[in-house]
Each structure stands twice: as C-alpha cells, then as structure tokens.
Length: 331
Image (cartoon, rainbow, N blue to C red):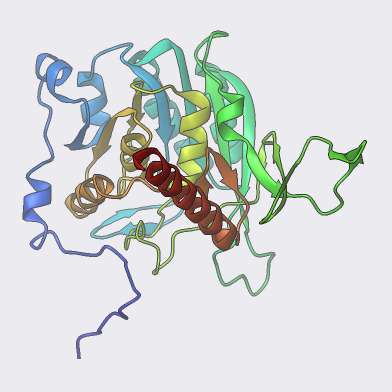
C-alpha cells in the first residue's frame, strides 16, 4: 500500500522521472574552455574529482564543502564505504588539493565533518590553508545510542588562503532575549526594549546552538539523509562573502549552498554526481525565486531556536507600519 504524506509534510522527494525538467537544467563540463563561460549559477552534474580540474583557477571567493563523513552510508543508489583513517586522510588531501587552485587569494573555506574525522580534516586542511577556527554546532536530531553518549555535535573547520579575507561580523549577530536587563539612568544598556520583549544583538562565538536540522514540515526539507539547514550555511555565507561573490560547493547534495547563495545575492557553482539530488537542488532553486526567507534569519540578524512567533510578530508589525506610512503619504 502506498504511503500517503500528511498535508503538512513539505518534504521534497520527487523522483528523477518526475523531475526530468529540473535535471535538464543541470550542465556537464567536459573541458576547461567550456567551464569558464557557463558554470556561474549552475548545478554541474558529474564526479567532483573529475570536474574540479576543469574549473577556472582563482575564480571562487568562498568554498563550503560537506563531503561524505567516514561512515558507511547509502545516498539514494550510491554507497560511501567507511575507510581506514589513513585512507580517509588521503581522500581529504586529494579533494583539498583540487579545491585550493580554484580559490582566489582572498578566499575562505569551510569544511563540515563529524567528531571522528574532525582531527583528520583539521590536520590536512592546515597543510593547504591557514586555520582560523573550528566551529562546533549542536544538532538536536537523532535517537541516541544504547552503549555510548548520543552524538549531538558536529564540526565545521574555517580556514583562509591568505591573511586577507572577508569576515563580516555585523552580518552574523545573534538576537538573544535579555533575562536580567541592566539599565543606566533608566535607559537600556547595550540592549533594546521592545513591545515583544527585551533583546540584545550579540557577537557570534564558534559554538552554535541555534541550528535546527531540516524536518518534514519545513519547506527546505528534502529526503537527503545528511541535509544541512539553510540557516547554518547562511551564517557562513554572510560572514565570509559579499554580494555577487562566487560560492562553490563541490558536494552539493540537495542544493542548500546554491539555494542560500541565491537568496542572499551571491553567485554559486555546485557539483553533484547523483541525479536525484540534482533534481531536488533545481526544484529548491526554483522555489527560491518565490520565497527568499531563511528560517531563523530575520530583521538582518539570526534568532535563537523556538522564536518563530517573535520573528513573525516583528515582521508583521514592520509590514503594518510600512502600509500605514504608505496610506498617509497617499492621503
């Protein structure tokens, strides 16, 4: 019996056959001459290790790489098999050696990994780049383990090609509720007093506990088994790139990097070998034409988890005020 999805289930899971139109929007790259003119804002269907040598050197401002972790995992028809630590280290070294020449001298790179491969990734990344930080983010998804601590954290290594790089601190502030507001002469000290509550825009640390893993009722969710959230990559992109910069993802998956780049006014290049994931990526890119919202990012700041009501209330109030001003100007 065919399983029927709930009306609230917004998971993107159309098949390759159902998404032939989306697949046709992807391109293949067979030569370096061909790639230079046609790759911007495209999904490239192909093996990233074969495609990257054909891409133009020093053309990328930011790399977001989310490769397979060193786990045996099936990705809709293909399986990545767990390797020895030495083999995974060489796998990491090979892909970073291909990424390095694609980056501008002012470029930055972020590499996702789990706790088990984090030391490998950090060590090899340091052979090519200057390590700037290791971000640890909390992932609340998962059922736990029977004989170990539940893994609730993942790492993202941040590195740059040189000492000259982009980092937009003010673009990635986090809006937090002020529990014990402090006033000077009766006025708020470094926080804002609003009808919806008291808030402070704080500088981000390298521990992120405000990320929600995409789930079935979120419009960005797909059936990809290792999808990252738009909010996660939006933080990276706003911090380490500028509008119109080129963002490259060599393991595009279901398209989160490209979608976020499009929503934030960046250019993108994504490489993905799985036709199924290319279909979902192109479907999401089409959806981004109509909806540029990123859940958890509003009013130019990132919000803590479980604050959707506050975000919506603020957005509605600003919309109402804008409409009222428009009416007054037209009277």
